[in-house]
Length: 481
Image 1 (cartoon, helix red, strand yellow):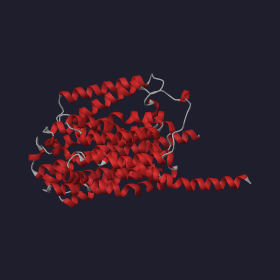
Image 2: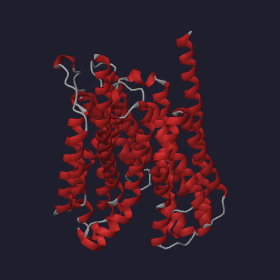
Image 3: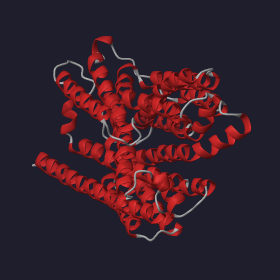
Image 4: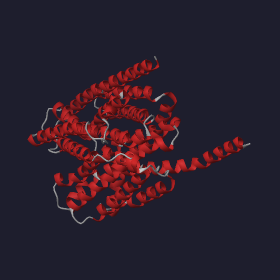
């Protein structure tokens, strides 16, 4: 008699849980939207901020750089912290930090206080980016992980696409402070939804909890910070300072590996990189992000200098990529759930490589730019969703935060590297020291060569994907035998 009652109770609980899962996903989606919006919305305000604070372009660039550096240097550490103290508790803290820092940015009386508040906002964004992905494995059934990852990818793309246009409207209507203050109501809504609908953290005995690796965390942050600065300072001119920062990054990374091999509770368990799926996914993510950054770095110059479009049209055309990503994110997730994440990762890379190759041989026309960009971006949306799903589906609960952090880190490092390296390739290929005075034909040639290089990078990622699948299949067969 008890079994039918228990079955009915389970069905009733599942029916009650479904709306909670939807609202929990809404809070995670809003968190991802806000953190992505924070990256893209500030770029459009840099000329206005330079005038408002009577500062140089190099000085106001730190408004963007401080945010990116804070995310890059803390994204793995906050993931590990979430694994230790509980994801819900830390995500709520991240939302509070992001929202409070947004208000401080909006009322900052000086440039350097604004930059400091942006750094704090970046730490909040790192928590939000990492733990939204980590929570998917906890609140969504495994069969629907791809769909949930696709939704988060869509929200990230919408945040990136919305930033320039929303920022321009807010600056025109209410001044530059509005681009930061707009986060306050959205951040409060995300906080309330997360507080109400995210599952409570599991309480574990203190004796079972591992400690936090403070030394490893500091070394990791310093190495990443040095690398990020090496790739960004000097605006493409790689001088002695860049070399010194790169050397410091390599030295810091070496020290970090030594420390991690000795501590009882490392920030990153180095043995995790023996997992072929994880290592391949991180490498592919970095390579693909490097290529995607090329579309953002090269695109505006190509559209304005080679095709002669005005600023408004450049902005509209540049929004095509994020718009395609937003439209294809959720369908890509459903496809990954249905046909398998590994197979869809390969197909996404093939589409991205095809788009890059087409762009490298097309004549300088607007349709000849938009069509390949749409192919590249749809391939990227499928790749990113499938790649994240493949990694996050089978991760232990106590490792979700740090692995999610590593995935986000690999993407961020790819973006930072792409801005520097692919920008340099474009400048060299255009055969000019000042791209703003280059002839249209030179800019078009530079774009084609840059995307020929991008095609090679995606082919390398494709080789890693195929090789990783072969290794995983061999390991599973040897395990069976």
